[in-house]
Image (cartoon, rainbow, N blue to C red; front, side):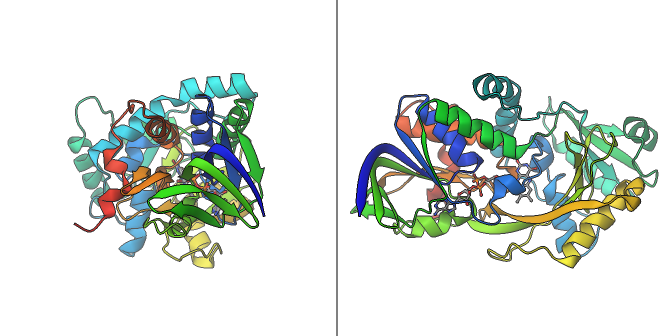
Length: 396
Ligand SMILES: Cc1cc2nc3c(=O)[nH]c(=O)nc-3n(C[C@H](O)[C@H](O)[C@H](O)COP(=O)(O)OP(=O)(O)OC[C@H]3O[C@@H](n4cnc5c(N)ncnc54)[C@H](O)[C@@H]3O)c2cc1C
């Protein structure tokens, strides 16, 4: 049995873990990230969409989930929206990306491939969808732009889109990046600031003495520390349970299709009630994604992939003849209210969560990590942490 000591151990090296490591190590804390790359880890499976308002009003993944749940693509009722506080959290986090991209590139040489296309364009394919979108547009507070486009406007903006539409809804500035490169850039920036990384190691147990978390155990090795951060993604609930901490994070599977590389086809990110599409920097079109409660099963299914491909070809008919390069499934760290879980847990010292990013864990990452780090350091939070504490799930 070996034993060592650091200030903070972060369990999990996805975007949440590495972003938090960077925040903490810049403030001179000795940080150790322990990561075992498990099949289905979310950051590498992600689409990299930065759609703060789109996801908050349900016109990203939400609309696809709703259409699948209600058994059709019609979308007769408005998709569920996220609370305004979290919409504003996402907008604030999103606003940090241009500066972050430059800072990370200067520090690490990694280009996170932040795209500056026209925005997220929802294709309205029925009159019913138009009514739903009109309602969403009316519900947005002053200052939020959702441009309603005629079919001609849509075709002018995106000539590859089907003409069989009744219009489009454009959220300007809602763009995309490469999520793997974002995590890689955070990782390199953290390492450059002094963070240590133990790759390919599993945290088996969070060690607790009474009301205090004191370290972690990895096989025969223990690391003692002042603070453990649980950033274990879809596995965060299981890991918290090793210290008797309740954390209702569960895996939510998302299947994805990636086409072969193509010349420029799309400048916007497109969403419909059947799928979303984003052309990546090297020309592939990423088609996502299902939202499935199937535990830790990372298989892809014929129905899932067919549904995405059908939706993609309906939206962009020229994709009918295009080859598929890769398909995969990832596990989003889901929570019952679809909001992240940040910060300390009542009755336990030396422990924090930075997880529950669910379907917005990339766009939310900069602010999730900043606020969680500020909390550990006793600094003033950039935005209130209270809505994201795990105590919201405690029985009254
Ligand atoms: C198909 C799909 C599409 C998505 N699209 C978008 C999108 O367009 N925009 C957006 O904002 N978000 C999107 N998301 C959500 C986003 O990707 C996630 O919320 C985010 O990546 C979660 O990051 P994380 O670091 O919390 O988890 P992960 O990336 O899963 O990282 C957790 C890490 O911890 C490791 N680990 C687990 N247990 C242990 C342990 N005990 N010890 C050590 N290591 C451990 C895991 O293997 C993994 O490496 C998408 C997700 C999926 C699956």
